[in-house]
Length: 248
Image 1 (cartoon, rainbow, N blue to C red):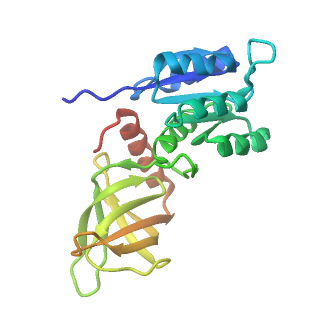
Image 2 (image 1 turned 180 degrees about the vertical axis):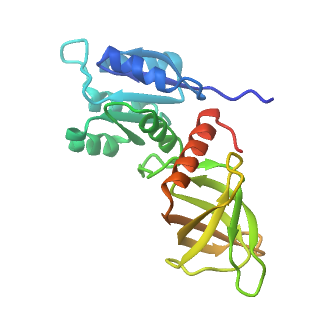
């Protein structure tokens, strides 16, 4: 079995209990906190020393030295020196404007506080999925590369079954045999390894365009009506694949 690459993190969090909780939510995943600190002015020297893949900064953290860089200033200084750094911020619901300021400064994502398992992994994966640091974005759900059976109806032909390219609890990406109109609602099904029967879902076509090989169409669908048991099964499947770091 191939060894899964560890993704190292430097964590800046003013709350020691929260730092311990953050580490707990990473157990069994490919993410690992190499070191953590309570102080924002420690960020730049720690990054210079460790060169982590990810940095997580609590927007409520403060500097140790009087007049030292606060969270936003520390992020700005880091990205000025190391534009390739991937920064994620954490903040409570009442810190909306500070989150927006951090994203404007170059942060790639946001983890809500208090920390939760899904919130932590979502924020980390979303940051890694943002190719251009100048265009930060927030994703509605963790999407993982996974080949699971995807069923759809093709008029004039038998039921089609193709593998997905990636999947989340809220949608999937797949190559299909014909074009569908953007916004069209279609009945589809997915069958994941943990579920012996296919799960039928009402979906909406988010986009559909010719694939590079010109023999299929690249389609993304949004799941709009999903039984709660099916959504729970999908959520568990995505969580397991997300934690393991590998495709199905």
